[in-house]
Amino acid sequence: MLTVETSLKEAMTSIEGSLGAALVDYTSGMALGTLGGSKDLDLGVAAAGNTDVIRAKVRTMEMLGLKDDIEDVLITLARQYHLIRLLKGRGGNGMFLYVVLDSSRANLAMARHQLKRIEAELEL
Image (cartoon, rainbow, N blue to C red; front, side):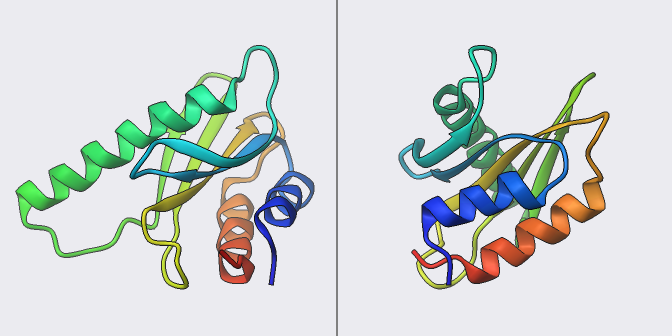
């Protein structure tokens, strides 16, 4: 089992092109842990902003009557991918893993695979 700190380190080292990672509580918008980032990538601000994205998508699904779970959300920028993976089970409800990737070095399929693996090993 991985702790929050270890899971973020795992995301940064096992996902090619990782620029930053965070574990976020989307009920409060607070980052429970962050690793990486830069002056141009404030993970605390990103955590709060992406909380709004998840809340909006959950509301939209409710309005549409969709009875399904969100696995992940991908936001593509010119030079970055922002990947949000909602956590399920073992106390993960209301939380997501967030990773920012350099789009020139990242493999999205592998990034999704690694986040799923990290989620399975994460102990909250």
